[in-house]
Length: 102
Image (tube, rainbow, N blue to C red):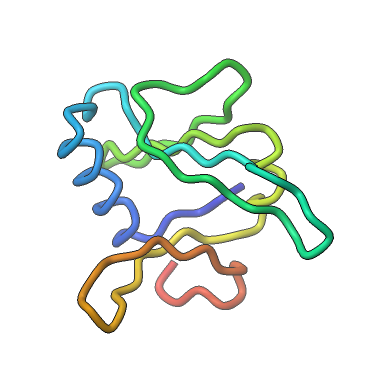
């Protein structure tokens, strides 16, 4: 199952609050295309999970919705947030063995 770092959970909570969807909303992962090089994940803020989605939640209230193919792809991964050179926060998916503090 996908694991979330505390930083990722805080970022998801902030995103859903910013979109006005903090009550039922969450961050949704879906597989957009599958190519030989791997899966292309689409990320969106969703008001609620779609039929068949796996729903992950944290004690802090952050929710993640995983489309079935995305759930399979992210099964042994950790979702984190990293800051780029411009100070922007970006979600990063890492193998659970590489995650620090998760």
